[in-house]
Length: 483
Image (cartoon, rainbow, N blue to C red; front, top):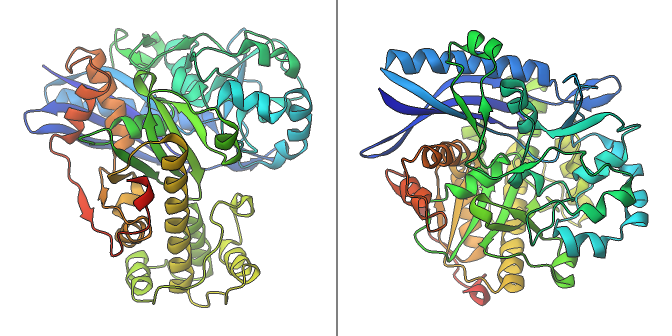
């Protein structure tokens, strides 16, 4: 029987269970279950229905077990990745105190000043290297009414706990909490007390590749998988898994993990904790094998997704392919907005907000749907170029090529605009980089890939059979200072 690995890959708008295996021609991935996701207004706040998510995970794993058995394979292990920063609070009996809040909920607005009074931003950045975002975990924890008698489990760790009964905190996701030491990769324990947090609020840290535990009997019965099936820690922050699967041939690359958000940066061996880096709002998040994902969270395809959702409410389902084709015919130099603005965090009314933002920036408001789409993509490409220029300047990292992975790699107009704005070639793909990185970490843990040095074995496997599209820039000047 062959080894296959199940990747549970859940984003802010949808989730999948994907089966992957290594073949002579490269990794092979098959999606066996898809399900919707989204924050919901429950109890007066934006929350995640993790009970529904867990039920979908179990259904997906049952489907995976059946598909593997029919192919004569066995599911060797399971890995889970999701978005970052959000968590559930679990008491000693394993009961969830309440459904987890979404990072898009506005409750942290009142806590930022409280946190910074106890821990000035300069001190926080010097220890954690984390980009300031109003929804970082430490601000969310400051908004909790009580943390007595509970542990905080980040969303992928919460799902792993429900599968195995084992509590842990995977390191790449822990680095998004604002409470992890950027240099050592251990908890910055001196930051807990000033915020009134217990030192054991989070379970112990584990690195990608570690076995979290085995399936609980009830889960094994529900999925048809044996109790011996391992749940393996992967880069549980989805961007960590995506960056691990970048099919780079040399270290001189930048990446854009393009989806609901855009994570734009370079891969380093050590954090950059300077005041200049803090002022530029760059983050130092941990990657697989202790790498540093030096990046900035920028605006993403959330803006386009929200516009499409609103237009579908107004009338017939919009034709995205047609809209992109029409947007591509519009002349350069149209209106742009600050795609990174917190004004675009919340759902609803997105087309109107984009038009008003364009007018506030001194442009004519985009009047047609295709003009709104072009405004979004031009604005994202501008944000990518600014961010990569800053990343190269602040880190001294040479950039020869940009790898775009994730759903945005399928957007040919966005990829071409990115190449044009940066003056660098763009290699787009793989689309399923997050699931691929998840599966390759599991495969390496099972002894099927070389363990070192660094990510060499994973990157070699990612390149095998990788389908990428190359976009050459129309203008080679934009990032010349970074080369």
